[in-house]
Image 1 (cartoon, chains in turn purple, yellow):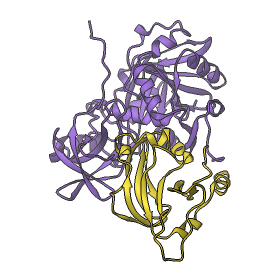
Image 2 (cartoon, chains in turn cyan, brown):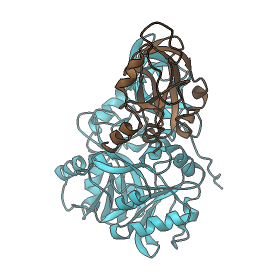
Image 3 (cartoon, each protein chain N blue to C red):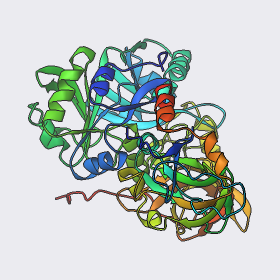
Image 4 (cartoon, chains in turn cyan, green):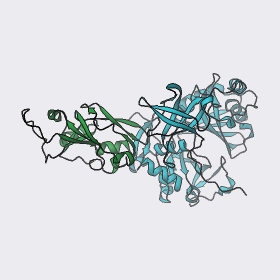
Length: 364
Length: 144
């Protein structure tokens, strides 16, 4: 695995006895102890993830807002400084280049956080649509990205920062200090729990990682990251979203501001809204023994009607769950379908997503 | 990584244990008297369970079916993925470990004991010669 890319925390992971695997050209920890234990740690306490393999592209300039408005489906123009939007870079053909989060960090300064497997593709895509006074810079090497997720995440982080978390609600962020180091702390994540994603300079990442671990955060690998996001019903690029998928079919309409003029992909998204969807991403629960996995066919009466995009055991609920694209007429909750597992049709039914939602404090 | 000396191993990380055999596999008796020591217990190795991670599902087929040496007899699934299981010997399945259906995690906690998968009445004891002993398996693991 010598030609694989490594994050700045690679040596830390090795020292902690992580099991390493290839992921999108990177050698990354899949687990430290057990995916099940790490998953539970995040649901019940707090977990720590190295996600420095994700791309962080800075965009600066007086036309940065217009540029990002043009390439992103969400309303970047409405972002306040210290706020973030999830959304899509759509192509012109009816697909998704990537799902990305845009953070507004200053008047004319944004960070675009992209999937590890799409770094080069996104860079080329963004560069080819650059317009006016908007300069791109790849900050991915200079900054490490550490996700601290779970009900104890903020308590743990509060040992190391003066940041008042009441000032950064969900999908907000702030520049601050963590353990004496410059940090950009965002209330975002990919687990379905409260938590933060912390950017610190690469040379300071190990210090922050070890301090957070010392305060009780459990190191977690990509295995738990995947089972956590699946329970939370969150899309994973390459599975639920691809260069050929329509994000409207993945129930992600709220991240597409169709009323915005002239953003890339608007034409086919608008047409799709007018014509209505032919298929839809649904949650499945297995009703017989068996685990649905990505790419398994979904059938009814022996006829293949769709495909599983992600599947596996739900550690929190104890069920076997999956996400799958099926025709709209088979997408209603409680619809009975079969997943073809090793040539055996295995009973499943459509259930609502997310499969898991954390209990949230009631609004006042 | 535990590698018990009394077992034989496949390159796919299954183990086989001759039952009622103290240390050596039973010898064939030139085809006359029935061979008493022809029942083998089969499972996956400590290396395999470690490589898989948390085992959450096993599919071991049914008692009575015939399995072939080095052919698929079942499936083991970890949180992340499904993997085929290959039989170390040919023969008839006389028992599968029903306990694993409800407690697949026994494969992780005790791969050579409670995590066993099936018992097979083997067709031809000479097939054991196609398998590695503990020393050979250990050497094989060093090459991975």
